[in-house]
Image (cartoon, rainbow, N blue to C red; front, side, top):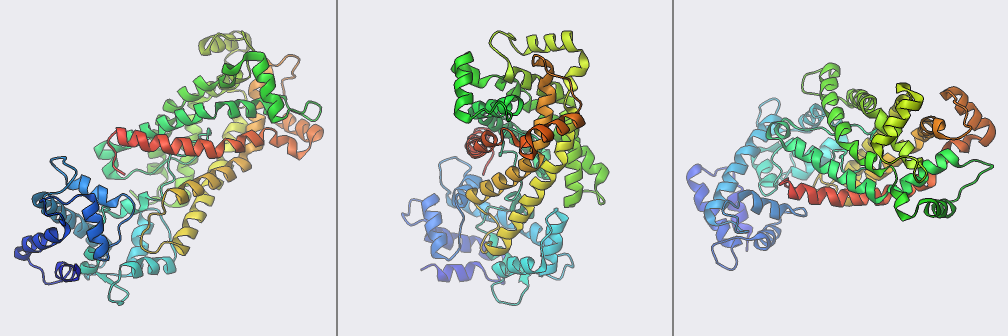
Length: 475
């Protein structure tokens, strides 16, 4: 039924005068109920019948992009305008890929274009991408093949393909040591970046609140658990409930949520500046440069908000009536211990950024490249489950590597508030833990820490999607 229209629509010899006629014939075929409007279901069924595969939500995105009168469908004027505008954008993308301006795209041009965007792939992977677009088997892609492949795909730039694989701020597991997201120039100029950061911040706030009891248990076990004072998960929760009731499980959560906004803002601004300083070519950044810039940005943000980290630990461990709130806590620390107390544990905290961010990024890149080489056939979009899985595994590996430093940091932050506790520097504390508790003593509290990863990732993803929608960010 659709094969004749498809053949006519994707021929090389179409001229401007034929466009409207071709659009009319295609629109008539898609408008199956003849009401003068093509809705999402009609568009999806029609494209499937033409052999044009659409990913989840892509038909809806096409309708939303062209629906000027907001009636959840496209009339002929909206339909033809969308196609003409979309084709112009695709032509610009094609020309940017065609490095030698010969009217053909080969695998080396695809490889180079992805490298320019900071995504290094093998020649084999570049060939696989090319084969998914190449209709006539020449191992090159001309404009007609490129248009045929992408005309009914809402992605209009190479950046949008890469965006599928951003290691997104949506995955908030309570630690803020990950490398920041990349934003395209279009996102920066349109203000989309701050909305995405706001959505990530909201997701982090809800996620941290939802998993706060497990986070408090982790800190409680890091500080109080030892060979002579073993604390089980159930026993620890019973002890907390007995001492302060159900609300005590959320102690320290307020400051943990409050520090998201300043930390995210400082990290983003610092990251942009470090990228400019470290990138070998303006506008391009390699993986190792991104790692260095991200680590420095993380260290800068942590330095600025570290007093809040100390207060979070103190408030998390506080007994009933010890502090009336965050400001009372800050006032008492300053009065009794001086300004230096707000930077206790700072050195192990900064040292922990390197293994966390490095392993997190390396594992994520490896998992991403594995998926692209093994499973990416018709689309570069891996889907929600793959993205969440890769993010969860890489973050968990990063935490596992940096956890001993996190434990030492927490104990140094807390030691002044513990009765009869000796004030120890980092080196002596590590030595004492190893002598008294062995190597696994550096992993006290790792169980509740791992238990909160999956719920934290799941909650933050759901909240992120809803917040994105509320802020008007299209999927």
